Image (tube, rainbow, N blue to C red):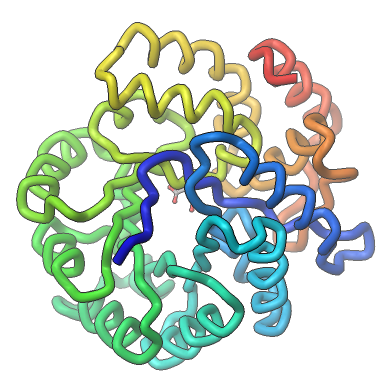
Length: 305
Ligand SMILES: N[C@@H](CC=O)C(=O)O
């Protein structure tokens, strides 16, 4: 498997027209701009930032196709795979392949968030989806506070399966991060490890191959620098970039809920001149009045615009 995600992997938003339909022209602008940033290795569409579960199946496929076109199929488009049941998720993987995706980011089944999972069930879901579709898959590690976070044994077993080549880790428990990442590295040396701790990336930057983040929509240039600093084990440089980005991180990700981050990303893309407006789909709601200005000022203070 030769998909190289060792760098920045933004998870683009899905732009909408004011009437709520998908804005394919804006996808072209967003995808081609992100691809033009040196260090961007792939785009993960239909994730949380991409409001993927708010789209119909037909729209999901068209969005994948549109992002593939936007990058001239020159970097991989990765599709969020969010369906709950294994067979329907395998169908979703096949759709993604048909639409041109080169890999899938497989979400845990929604019910596991509340009830947990039976031992072996995540492994089975990854196995069947890959066997039936041939779509290479990324292990998605959810936060420790959820019941669908994967224990170390489950991570290692999923990572050992054919087709699984990378992990997007958002465990948000630094004790687990510091103790589990070295074991995963040692036991699965080929697995590409990506952080997605958008709201406090700094701690994780010295252990990863790259980032798979919604944040990549709005500050790709500085995040590429942050990845480089982390790989060089250059803490002062990484800290400097972190501090520069902090106003942006705060106005986008230190909000009442991580979901609001998606709306904030769209405002930031308006401020960067990529989107014309920040229309989202329900159940996302507009941010409070003035948020757009705060986000614009944060981007200015970071020297991004
Ligand atoms: N960065 C978030 C949202 C992305 O999917 C995460 O940690 O999962």
